[in-house]
Length: 122
Image 1 (tube, rainbow, N blue to C red):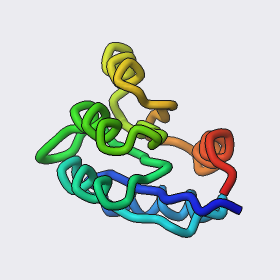
Image 2: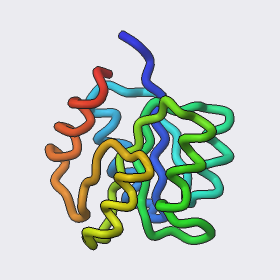
Image 3: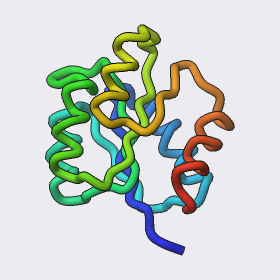
């Protein structure tokens, strides 16, 4: 089994823990956490994560601005946007910048598991 490095990026500690538990549930154990976009980019330089879950609304740098920079640092990263913003144009901008999937908050644990399993075999 390949080791999958996951980076969970959300300004909410609750959401970081919740998403981390779901990522762990599918078998990934190399899991890291960032509270904002700047921290995520700094960590990505070292980690080159396979999986990134990314919130849109965060302090210091929003998720939309992070996508392009993240993929410059780590082009192989698969970014899954998880956000309470459901605006179609925002989601489309995120897709155009390179995310592989979008999950609207609130979401069910099994929905996230299904999307993660589709993209990763932990």
